[in-house]
Length: 549
Image (cartoon, rainbow, N blue to C red; front, side, top):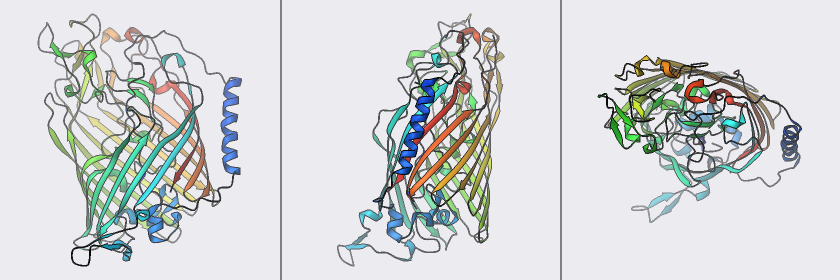
C-alpha cells in the first residue's frame, strides 16, 4: 500500500561501455586487500552522512502514497515497514488493490463525468499516482581492481531509481497497475520506460475464487519471498551481454536464489549476425563483432518465475478459505532455436498461511518450465579449426526447469523469510569432438535468507545471507585447462542493513555486503589468470534513502 504494494526491481542487465573481463587476456597478478587511510576516511564520511540524515528532523513529510491517501490509513497498515508487506497488505495485493473482503474497498469516492447513463467515474489523481525514489552513495572494494573498470572511489548516485506508479480500480473488481521507471544505473541510457503494466479481473466466480492478471508483471508477487519489496534493494551489475563470454566488471547484489546460476548460456543465434560454416563442416560459427545486446545470460541474472517482469497471464485465489492460496500462469517467451519461436512457459505456485494474533507463518512452493529457453555456447580452444575466435552454439536449445520452496515467519518485531531454488538444464552437445570434451553441470541451486528486526518504531536492523551453487560450464576443453580449470564458481554474500524511518514512507539506511568466497583465478591459458568475477567484488558499503510519496 505504501508504494502500491510492489516496488520495481533494479534493471539487472548489461553496460555497453564496460570492458570485457572474460575472454580478454589479463596480467596474471592479484592485489591484496588493504584497508588504507583513504578507505577509512571514505567510510567515516559515509557514516557521518548517515548520522546527519538521522539527526535532521523531517517535519514536513506529510505526503503518503496513493492507496494510503485513498483509504485514509497509515503506511504501516499494510507494511511491516516500507516496502515489506504484512499479511493484511498481501491480501490487499491479492484482491486487486481493494481492501480485503470488499469490492473497490467498500467505498467509491470517485467523480462522475458525463452523466449517469453514459458517464464514467474517476478517482482523484492523488489516489491514483505515487512515486518512489532511491538514492545511494556506494563504495565497492575489489580483490583485483586492475581487471575491472569499476571504481573503488565513493560514487554518489542521485537518483538511483525513480518509479512512477499509476494504479487503482476502474470499477468493482477491475483494477490496473502501471509503473514507469527512470534508472541511472544499468545497461541502457537513463530514460523513462514502462516496466510493469497489467490489469486484474478480481473475484471471478465469487469472493477469492479466482482473480485473473494479464500483462507485464512479476510472477512471484505472491510468493513467500517475492522478487520485489526487499529491504536490501538490489544493486545493479556493471556488465555487458553483447559478447560471449559476457563482460562482468561487477556482479550485482541481489538474492542469489533468483539468479540463473548457469555459466556458458546464451539466448541463441537470433542475437547474432554474420555466421560462417567451419571448413571441417557441420558447425556454424558466429563472428564476435556481430553479436547483439542480450546474447549472454549472466549467471547472476534473475530469471523466469523470479524475473523483475514477464509478459503473461496468471490466475490466483483462495477458494478453500484463507489458509491456502493457489497461482497458475503462463509466460510468453522466445525460444533459443536457430529460428526462434514463441513459447508459453507454464508455472504453478501453492502457498499455505497460518495466522494468530501476533504471529504469521506461510510456506510456498512453485514449479516453472521454460521450453527451449537457452543455448549453450563455447569459443573453440586453440589450435582451432575455425577461422578465428568465433562463437559456436550447441546443437540444440535446452529446456530449463526451475523449482523452489520458501517460508516466512513474522512475530511481533521479527520478520524472517527465505527461499531455496533449484534450476536444471539439458546436457549440451556441440557435434564437435574437441568442444564436446568440455564439462557441464546440469543443475544449480541458490539459497537466500533474510531476518529483519524492529528495534523501535523507527529503527530496523536486518541481515541477509545469499549463496548459489552454480551449474552450466564447469571446465573448458583441454586446450584451455590451465591453472584452476573450473569456470562455474560458486558465490555467497552476507548483507547487513540499518534503517531509520523518520516517517513511515521515508527510510534512511546504511548497508554493507561482504563476499564470503575465497579468491579464485580464471584459467591461465587464454584468460590471463584474472580474478574470477564471482570473487572479485570483495565488499560494498552503501548509504542511501528510500522514500515513497
